[in-house]
Length: 295
Image (cartoon, rainbow, N blue to C red; front, side):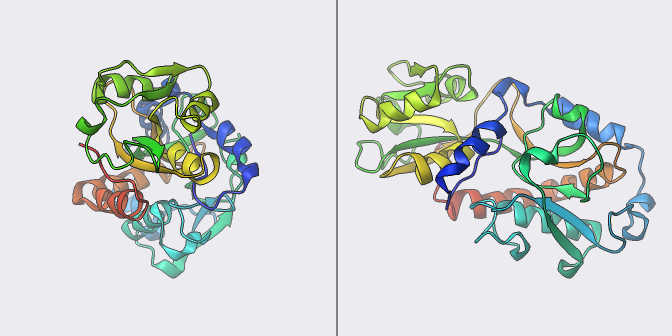
């Protein structure tokens, strides 16, 4: 799953739709197997900066698409260190021993990133969902972001000012069929009225525009896209974590068989344990993005 968010050109919808993986395809199992295939026995010495097998000696080459959308990157500039994924990339680079000027960025179209074959990057960061199908052609790190659900409402609507899940109990909520959003609404929000289920996301969006429903629930990256490009006068009321089922996760992507995977997994584990990953998420996907946590 990967959808453009802010500053979208209207033509980006096709890319967004193609990039989104079905909810039941996301799998942490794919991530684990990827790490194992890359050599889970890699020791500390093999992860020393001078021991890493890099595309360009002395440089960590990171790929992403262009344009690079907010809130994942700031001002279409991955090298700034601003935006969620830019910050994650530099945090991982730091754990591996690289300074900011030792990180090089290269443009990699989203669809070609997980195509089979040699890669001209050490890893790619581009809101790429870990799926078993993609893991046949490339390797993934462990997940660096677990996708949350976003509540979108019209700015003029009754529920635009909701600050908690309890505030949404009486809302008429729309969701797309066969998505994690449907399960999340029923199990987490538990509205008094069962959600309206639509076969296509566009139908839920139309119902919101026509005020037939009070809000829609979609994954958070889609929520950024909906408010930026699809529904004028809408806002993200907030976000919340889904419960149950296999979570959808974004992973850093590598050429199949890359020896870097286990070292990057180690770096991500350290960033998670220290609270740095949560701090980066809070800064760029909550506060700066205008998507407060609903509890």
